[in-house]
Amino acid sequence: MKKIIQISRLEVGMYVESDDAASGKRSLKARLISGQDQIQQLKAAGLSQVTIDTEKGKDVPKKQAVVKAPKKPKPKPAGRKVPYREELKQARATRGVVSKALRGVMEDVALGGSMDKSKLDAAGKLITRSVFRNVDAMVGLTRIKEQDPYTATHCINVCVLVLAVALSEGINESDAEMLATAALLHDVGKTRVPLEVLNKPGRFEPHELAEMRKHTLHGEDILKEMPGVTDNILYIATQHHEMFDGTGYPHSLTGDEINRFGQMTAVADVYDALTSARVYKPAMPPHFALSLIYSNRDTEFRSDVVDLFVKSLGLYPVGSLVILDSGEVGVVCEPNPGNTREPKVGVVITRFKKRRPTPLVVDLADPHATEERKIVKVLDPSKYKIDVDKILKMTTG
Ligand SMILES: [Fe+2]
Image (cartoon, rainbow, N blue to C red; front, side, top):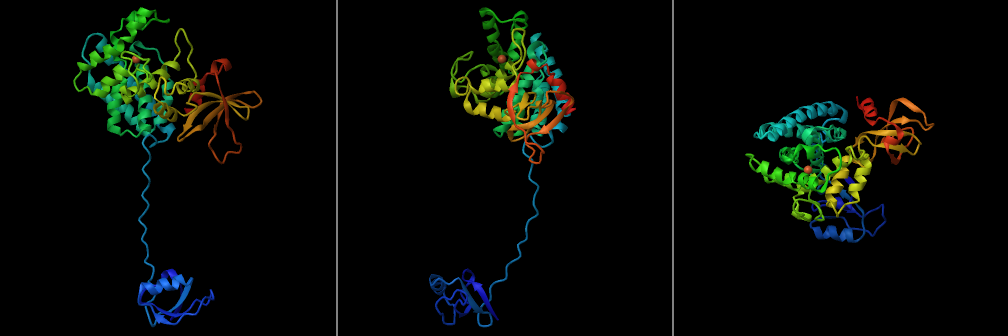
């Protein structure tokens, strides 16, 4: 049987019947191919096809059926295993349990008692699990800024933000659990700061500031006495106010003298403080706080840590009030993972400047949306008399 085959399929043992009729190349004597050199000669002659006689020589090998392995479902990335809204309810409950545990531990320490590390480890585990299920849900809840003695809420917020950054860097779950415990304890030294200083509503006098700053060293003292304390726990407590350029305290460390987890905690700590209201200052909207931190890359904060932080929160963190190019005003109510510029927005003011009784949620990243919308600017909610938390509750349930 005669077959025309591509020259690339020609093998030793095949019988070439004639030259390539289709290409009109030079004539070729019929022969049995006995060596690779003959195949090379034919290729060099510019032939693209040849006719073979399968009764006088080898046939082309039949293509082996390729058995495709069944496609394994891709494992979902850490921090995005369950949908945002699904995790939100669990994350709220987790915050409640952790907050109670942490307040209890801080009060025990403040009264001179010993620290129940097992309670803290359990709390750290709970937060870590939630962050690994859906990091955006827990990060979204860092908007919660309750005032409480020994700032347990602040410690939880910082813990979540540090975990989010470490997750972006690829930390595994068991290391993250240890990090979570460490971050929950970063301000434990405040239990030894006199209450009149700790709870002072206004700005500190220089001597009060010095007293307050000692909490880093008190923290080290307290933690050193605790069994099972790792170096990371100590570093986070003592170094979370050190600044990359050496302007921090207590030891004015610079650059990589500061432990990486200490650097992450420094960024998270400043962000949570900036976005919290104080008697002497209003809360800074999250986007502005991020911009301020970003402008301090390579001065106060290490640039790659800042970049990871921005990536973790999104350029427009949940709760940001934004104006869209359509003229609509809304609240960022849900991030789109991997897309820091195009979150979901609950629109509360229409393009005709009318208030909507219920927010209209638009997904800026939706390629099938009837209208393409973009964020133009971030607004200050206090100037618009918009209750951001109320809008968030309405959009996320
Ligand atoms: Fe602190």
